[in-house]
Every structure is written in C-alpha cells, then in structure tokens.
Length: 60
Image 1 (cartoon, rainbow, N blue to C red):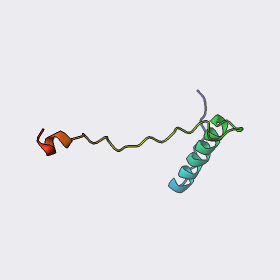
Image 2 (image 1 turned 30 degrees about the vertical axis):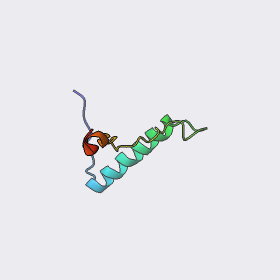
Image 3 (image 1 turned 135 degrees about the horizontal axis):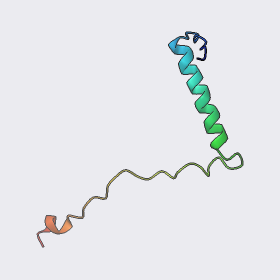
Image 4 (image 1 turned 45 degrees about the vertical axis):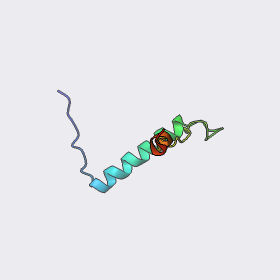
C-alpha cells in the first residue's frame, strides 16, 4: 500500500508549455550539431507532369 502524493493541479497553458519544452529538448538531442542541413529532406515538387496532348490538338 503505497501512499500517493496528490498531484498539483496545473493550468492547461502551463501543461502546454511543459510539453513544448520537452519536445524542444528532445529535438535538440536528436539533431546532429555539426550539420543542421543533414537531417532535413529535400523538397519535391508537388506539381504533376501534364500529358502531352499535341497529337490530339493537331488531329494526327
């Protein structure tokens, strides 16, 4: 029978701040310190290639 200490009630704002701090600490430990560009991915274009419909337009 362990006696539990009643948890101190904190506001929602404080809880969110704590979570953000934990997330920042976690990302800082995972990131390589010597090259910040190494962990980022190269952006890819989201535009799709348009089909060439020249034959359809010219009637060939």
